[in-house]
Length: 241
Length: 206
Image (cartoon, rainbow over the protein chains, first blue to last red):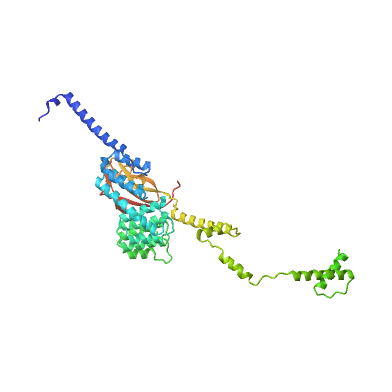
């Protein structure tokens, strides 16, 4: 093995290793400090930015890789979309060490679905959407769109539930997404969402009904039959326990 | 107590009204004559309105300049009207109640109860298992599972607000594991799947 002459002496090896460690540490520190110089998107809460930067400092991303995502957060803020719904998705990806392209695609998708969700709410007669409970509903609708919940079902449920509390509508929307993720067909999902909205079910009842539907679906029961089982009693307002 | 003068006046009044009182004294006759003359002079001095008076007044009113739009409103508003203030106050109250109710319905958040949720993962070979999810902003290290027990299970009991949560287990700080017992899983967009948990149940005092 051809070892350089200068490294044959033990003290030289120690010096070489120390120099390598200093270089690597210095580069790592330089990369970490890079984030201190980055301006947060205008309007983003200080806490959200601090959490995100703490995530980013511990992971091997450069500012250039993340900057497109930060630009999208700035766009969301400008358009009045809830920024935390975007920052959380970015933070999740960073913690999971997703590659930069996947991060950008996920953040872009979230901004797009929030944009699509906003007029759905206003068109359905929910004008005060820029409040914390309504922003929660907006995020739920965006999430449902990401999961390909039928738009007709979303529109109908939002319209039917117009005038009721944001939190209850949010549960209806989330139930629709759960049904989609369970693999139910689009028509059954739309009908069940309408059922939930029209029957003024409470949050717990909606969750219980969704679990019941999931059990029946896994047992191979058809969607129409599940609806019959749910609402077989003409006056039924509550799902079976 | 009635005086004699009152009785005399009664006689004069009744006679003027066409009553048939017995003849009275010269003093009363004189006073009656005085009244009759006064009435006759009043009758003579009566001035009647010209027959075209109403038409002339209406014609002048029609010629008066009419203000339109905001100026007409400005003329109308300061005119004192008894019904205006109560009507305005009532309308305002109704509007406030209506919009207040609508706002409450649209924005009102139900108080979310905290519900105790039990998590479990079978990972007999693991050194450390963490619960990471939307409820702790995907921050590793915040919730550690205890274990493993004799059967290799790691467990944690966490109080979560009612609603939807997504989570994964992080094993030994590097391996992301989807809860194999989850009824619903959702692709996370990063090549893995989050377990979806809809929490609703027994309320726990905050």
